[in-house]
Image (tube, rainbow, N blue to C red; front, side, top):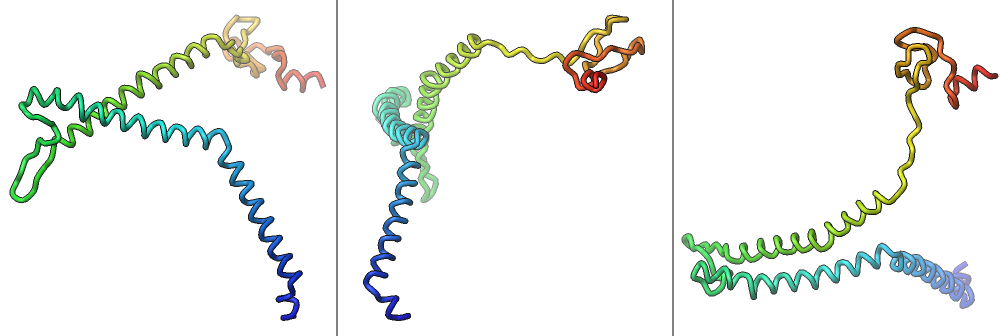
Length: 173
């Protein structure tokens, strides 16, 4: 038994099975990575990070200096209040809030709004599916009656079976 365990051919067989099992697992991993959703998500995250850097720079280098002109500060991020030993740097917070608002506005106006307009246009062009009727007209009193009803709720007349219902199939058999 111990001799079989250390037999070279047996060890090679274990190695081959392990290698093939590992390669089949990598094949599944490769299929997962090359699915459209994963690749699209990766591209979206990378583009989003780059876009975030652009917006941060816009806020820090252009917008906050303009606001700083009105509050007599060179840079909004230098705005701070000191209470005892604690310093509250609310200027940095203002920068982050402005970045968030700008990012949200750009995403809404350049992504969400055009996509919603395309969906609305597509919905208008797509043919509407006709829904099956749920009521029918009573031939005696001309009131609306449920499709599966066998008597009219208003005049209590016996109704002929509606076309295409199970009641009609039961009556005919």
